[in-house]
Each structure stands twice: as C-alpha cells, then as structure tokens.
Amino acid sequence: MPYLRNPYTWAPLYLFILIFSIRTYKKRGVIMMLFLVLSFGIADFLSASVIKPIVKRIRPCNELTLQGEMVSRVRCGSGYSFPSSHASNHFAMALFLIMVYRKRWSAILWFALLWAFAISFAQVYVGVHYPLDVTAGALFGSIIGYSMATLFLYIQPETTRQIAQP
Image (cartoon, rainbow, N blue to C red; front, side):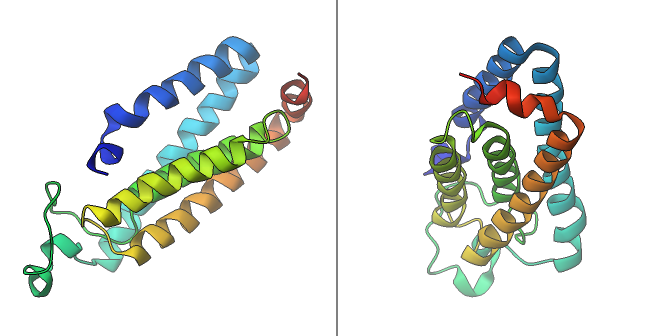
C-alpha cells in the first residue's frame, strides 16, 4: 500500500494517458489534457489550500490518543487530514477520464474507479487519513472531475464524436 502513495507508481499511467490522448486526438487531445490537469489542479488547490486549513483535522498518525494503536508505515507529515488530497486529485482525474472516454472504452469506468479507490484506500491503510477523509475527498474530486468534463464536452462537443469512433 505505501507504493500506491508514491508518485513514481502512478505517474507513468498519467504520462501514458497524456501522450496517448495528444498523439491520438492532436489539438483536441491537448485541450483535453489541459482540462484533465486543470481538474487535478483545482481539486488539489481547493482540498489542500482552502478546505484543510478551514477544517484543521489532525491526521490519525499525529493524533496523540491513537499513538499506541497506530502502525507507522510511512512518514506522517505535518499537514491536516480532511479531506484527502490524494483522493480528491485521483477521483477528479478518474471522473474526468470516465466522462470523456466512456463511449469508446466502457472498461475505463471500472479501471479508473478501482485505481482511484486503491490510491484512496492506501491513505487509510498507511494511517495518514481517516476513512471519512478519503470518502469526502473522493466525493469532492468526483464533483470537480465531472464538472470539468462537462465543461470540456460543452466547449468541444465534436470531441465526443471523435473519441466514440473506433
């Protein structure tokens, strides 16, 4: 599970999606990937820089009352816990990709959700987030990813037809 927290584990997948989309869909692919990166950026900024400082929930690994019960699997970090930015970010990207690619590759629904869920579950497993942190992060990120995909498909409606064609 600690490996799922590591950007070296998931960055190659996102790099592949970036290169694949641009090479396959050219200008539309570039715009699509800009929206994907924007989804990630909005989710990350709002969860880490806006919501966490307002809520100020202590991470379980820093909670003094849980010290005897916590198994330290990774460095805890000093930031706040709610919501999980990992969950927000990965669910934002997952929902964006699902909305854009679902007509061409129906399997992306389960793959993207499983991937985002696994990364989110890893946050709880290693003790840096509570289950509610990742649940809220997943919902928050999903809303952002869905909204950004809806905006992208509104701005680029012909992209849906181009992607849907085999």
